[in-house]
Image 1 (cartoon, rainbow, N blue to C red):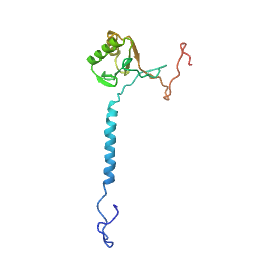
Image 2 (image 1 turned 180 degrees about the vertical axis):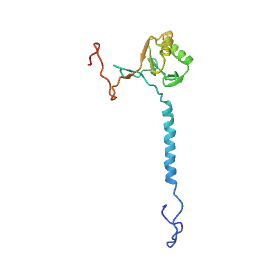
Image 3 (image 1 turned 30 degrees about the horizontal axis):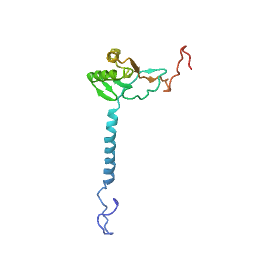
Image 4 (image 1 turned 120 degrees about the vertical axis):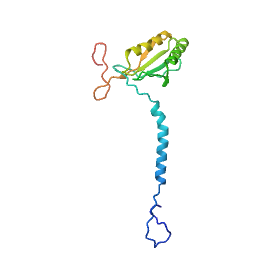
Length: 159
């Protein structure tokens, strides 16, 4: 143990001056493994601050031929199905999807800081590819205390 004596003699009054670093190394290696595993997950998550709207429904997962999830971050970068994409790659994918299934839906997740002109441009690309179903993904509206806001009916009264 770390509290033992360096010599085997009982009469020796000198304490051991070495520190046992094995537990420290063990903890550090565990932390390194945790950071190595967590780093790709943190980098892969896209920070998009969605606009809030009343009456939003949860986004349903769709198959490859049913929908295409397109995300635009605050800097205007494009992401298809969670992967970074170029404008040319997006146009090609939209054309392929429109040719395979004209009833497929483009699910557009644009940050609230993205200019309207950029969103309109993306909608134009989808329309040119033959896709007419475009879904806008938004966060549910929240009160000041963080709870979902009351959903208003057609007359403006809460349900």
